[in-house]
Image (cartoon, rainbow, N blue to C red; front, side, top):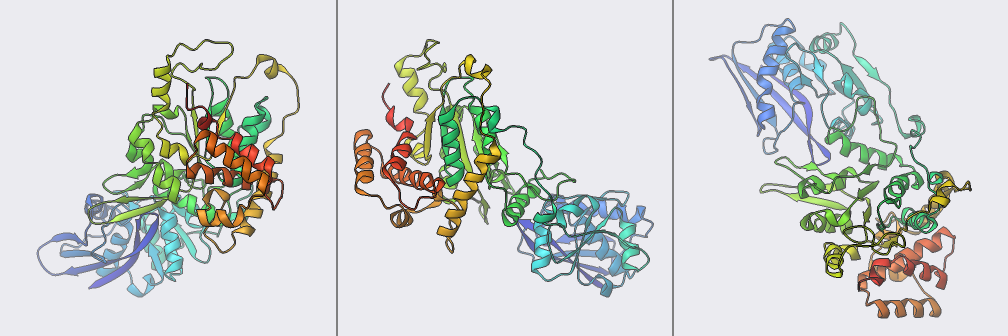
Length: 510
């Protein structure tokens, strides 16, 4: 007797429908799984056997063949346990096959028959809706996550026996009502706020421009000048995630196993801060079965790289593709997986190895050669991909103790949201979300300069021998500054401010 149970596997950040076909035939006792199963799927045989027996059923002593179709897609993970067990019960005749129709099932089994949560349920739930399947049955621990998807019924189970009684019509599973962006409420309050930062007016303004246009930024300053705190405040002035952005961000964290049982939808923009000892696979993603790296976990948020020159050169150079394209492709012999990686890069570095070059109060102990070697760890092509370069000076103690008004993040966020609204209307119908993503052709259309502004920009390019990419970066930043003022035209003062944000281009000599 053959039973067929729909389930899914995750490929990249998307789900792929898999049919679990179960055949029980007369013959010598055997239990085989075919269809390109990975080791974790092959091991499910012992979990399923013990779970069925400990749930009070007699495990068949015949020849059992499990086919995971389509057979040319590699299967990985423990979510096949539950559909395999249900398929065996249906093939035994314990459950009627027609009662299983219009149900997609996924979950991991313990040896006692209890059901454990698994990774990547959100992509599976999205696939359920896409395939027109009305109901998804998941572990209770994954119920809230799956309920983010609209227009499907989400049922949670804690034990294999609950599944059995539900399909026999003798019991019910735990329903999870649909949740969406609107019903999640406001994001949790932030731990930091721009009003907590004293002075540093230039750095705050640069971060506002960065958030308004989605521009990458690098901050150069001595230890203790506040670079890390400024970076952690950046997500507080960025617009709230929309529903589509929140779902896409949550999918990535779900696949990586970073979504807790109490989190249904990620509402706050991610802030990732990996250590400088990270490998290229940890930053970009990789592994035998490719998993998202830090650049993808920072999708729609901020990737903060402190001590920027301390990262290995090849690790930093691996950032070029995601910074340029907004995604990262990991290739293997038989397949390639693309993960989204549209993030804002915030880098921080000292001006020299000791950290005090240019400090008016502490003497620098580095030689010119040491400073040059330190800065040259960041390649020119990578630096060209960072729109804003600023210097962050040390804060005076008198400024810290002074009681003065500092703008809170909420007010700055309103200005940023206004500029983003202008950009959304401008790029309507294009695959562009912010000024930082404009191509050269789009720049020519929307970054028109008057004579004085063009003369100023050309003089700066000539003086500091800027590359064509740096020239375009200045135009993008100037466009954002104009948007913050709701100005259609890019004026000379906008260009002047944008040029001010190219500090590393102006200090190439020691």
